[in-house]
Amino acid sequence: MILARDQIERLAALASLEVGEEDAGRLGHELARILDFVRELDTAVTDDIEPLTHPLELSQSLRSDCVGEPVDRDRFQRDAPQTEAGYYLVPRVIE
Amino acid sequence: MKWESVIGLEVHAQLLTESKIFSSTPTRYGAKPNTQAGLIDLGYPGVLPVLNRTAVEMAVRFGLAIGATIGRRSVFARKNYFYPDLPKGYQISQYDRPIVMGGALDVLLADGSVKRIGITRAHLEEDAGKSVHDLFPESTGIDLNRAGTPLLEIVSEPEMRSAEEAVAYLKGLHTLVRYLDICDGNMQEGSFRCDANVSVRPLGQRELSTRTEIKNLNSFRFVEQALAFEMERQIRVCESGGTIIQETRLYDSDRRETRSLRTKEDAHDYRYFPDPDLLPLDLEEGFIDAIASALPELPRAKRERFEIRYGLGAYDATVLTQSRELADYYETVAGTDGLDPKLVANWVMGEVLAGLHRDHLEITGVPIAASDLAGLLARIGDGTLSGKMAKEVFEAMWSGGGGADAVIEARGLRQLSDQGALEAVIDTVIAAHPAQWSEYQAGRDKLLGFFVGQVMQATRGQASPKLLNDLLQKKRHPPS
Image 1 (cartoon, rainbow over the protein chains, first blue to last red):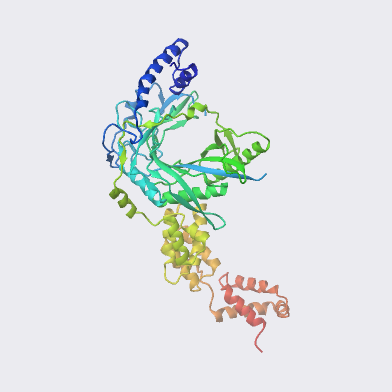
Image 2 (cartoon, each protein chain N blue to C red):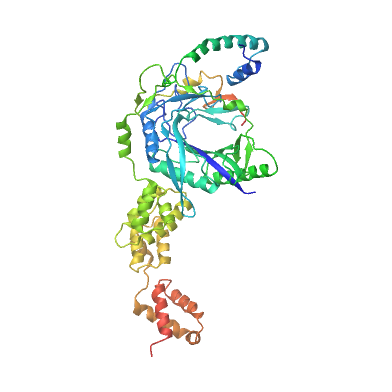
């Protein structure tokens, strides 16, 4: 089974990826193969099985509500492409 | 055709923790941009979230207060979408296994009736950062201080039928979260935010119509205005043969209208899945019981107690129990020996609340201590002050004049309630106006006001109004 063109476009949009003409066809094949592989799981009978949300059989541990982690803003902002007046700058987002 | 509106609210309450929900950076409001955004908040690769115990306790506290089922196992999930103020590209939230399920809030309506509004669920999640659009000419600035602040999202059933009911529910919720001390309720600063889902249907129709979602409602007034506008808009569209499109709309408080936020349909495909970085949250019975046994008196119980114990009406009791601090203030004054609880209610709801509103103060910053207000009201009770003089003393105390007795002394504001002394003044006034007095005695009732005015002038307003009236009546028709 091959993923239709509009399905590829939708996935690309959700992932914020630009997918060119020739890539779309190749990706359609590759994704379809992955889906076929995973589809084998559909044959398993899961009627009486609690959905597994985590492979480890452990519970979340909790931390005390204490402030601790230091924030070195200058250090973090060196990793960003553009900053000004303490803000991270991104291309203008119009709402 | 008669129309009915169907409203459901989603409220985001920022929880009053010191640190973030999954990291240990501070949650304080108003810090310099990005000085409270650490590695985890910024979504650096390789970091792991660790859940804040206090945030969990607060969610449980809320669930118990609305009679909900507490999820003994709840699960955190990733809600995937791209926006610059969301560094990881997903928000950690809860999806099909929230921590709070079901429950209800009893809401007091303006006509004094109580309506029960169902609460579908409440779940824990992290807040996003803030985008600043007006600071840089070419770019949007991102401040991630808010990223990771714990939120409780409280989702109501679509059970409200008017803007008034929606506001009443929202106010009830606002009061509750502050009673529980889990949220400061500051709508201006965004710690208590509301989105509304609204649709209209012909009265009598059972099934729900297409709804719109209104965002950006950061005051009770805006909620009321936006809902009223949106319901009217939808009715207009339906009556002119149009159809309602499911969409998100933004409320513009300047133009008092809602506007479509043309977002792509795709934006709503969040592809939730369990967050592999977080294990399931399992709560033991002892953990929940300990929180249950520490719950404070809740607004509804307090309101009912005020009605019974102090003989107050539903409206007064509701106003006085809006916050724990106000209720405590009232109770301290009303509990003073010899004071009439109804008189105390009138003063607290009248002068005190008006003064707080005028000076933009909270009850916690009230300039007149409860014991001082009790002292003032006692001076009305014992006849030292008339109601009018008491207001003057109150104003002086409000602006730092000290206790009631000190103000009364300093201003010579003692009510003239000595019968002999007042009679002497009245006689002088009558002697000065013999013609008017004869007319008054002959039946011109209107002249009573004239004599009251003259005596008040002569006593610099200190004559006891009640005694003065009694004496004037007695002198008008002297026993023969």
